[in-house]
Image 1 (tube, rainbow, N blue to C red):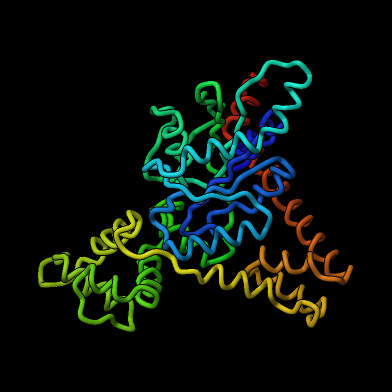
Image 2 (image 1 turned 90 degrees about the horizontal axis):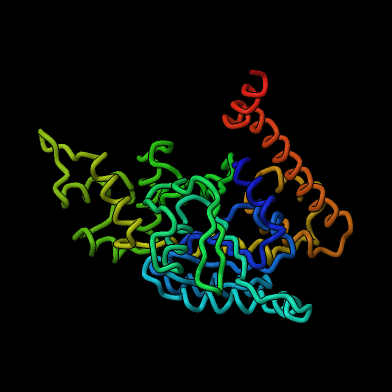
Amino acid sequence: MAKAKRLIQENLKIIDVVIELVDARIPLSSTNPMIKSLIGDKPSVVVLNKADLADPAVLDEWITYYKQQGRKVMALNSKGGKGVKQLVSLIRSLAAPKLERWKARGLKNRAVRTMILGIPNVGKSTLINKLAHRSAAKTADKPGETKGKQWVHIGDQLDLLDTPGVLWPKLENQTSAYRLAATGAISDTVFDMETVIGQLIEQLSAQYPDELKGRYKLEELSEKPLETIEAIGRKRGCIVSGGVVDLEKTYKLILKEFREGVIGAFPSTALANLKGMNEMDIAKLKVADLKALLAEGRDIEALLSAMKGDDRVSVRKLADTYMKRKVKEEQERERVLHLYDPEVSITARACIM
């Protein structure tokens, strides 16, 4: 993450428009908190990728939400190509004022320089390949496949910069961690498969019961996720000797079909929570109460947004102080990580030798 951030900071000065790529199924969970502060006032667009895998009704709500936040936003399916042409037009329009200034100064017209930012496995390389109409960037259905920065020239219209996936090092929000694991942003080797699939089935059973029963030909869904998982395993023939359900095989089956959009989608609970936080009567809460909410670490982005709109100077100051502290903590963490960066260590040893 430290290396990725350095690459972003080094190249932002020459970038005209930033594309912030998020997973349309889990926009908030797949948004790195540092990206917004990194890009600052740079023209940008939030792209809800993998829109074909999201619940259409929920997707429309997210688009409305981002527009209300004053952000440029659009949904697309980079794998299938739907929405890609519209993205190019939007990028050109966002860069138009800067290009006009170039033209007014008598400078030669050039391609729009665009940086694509996003967490691992959100579809950055797939989008670049679709825009370039060739395999310009390496892709794989696993996180962290992009290894370093690479420029891709799209005719005379766009110059795209791909960067390594940026994922915060510590996932304090368990809901976000579970959703990232379910969608593939976190490697399958670092999370408890049983816990993730159990939560996934519990949520799908509550939000999309008919679809779940229809897909696996189940008459009923149990209140206990494990029993539903076992029923799915039996229906799909995931049986080992003795008639016992092969749970590991069943977990992988369910996860594969969810990631491919065969079953379910994430409901709008996160958006509902966010709206609820924005509508919270912050004025009725004391500063001490707000400090306690911040310490809990839940719905931080929404809470800070509500606090920044409060009439009290003390509340707005608390929000700013919290953000500054988090930035300092991140900087210190990256400083320590930089000391142990393999490339830095190798360079240091070479200098000594």
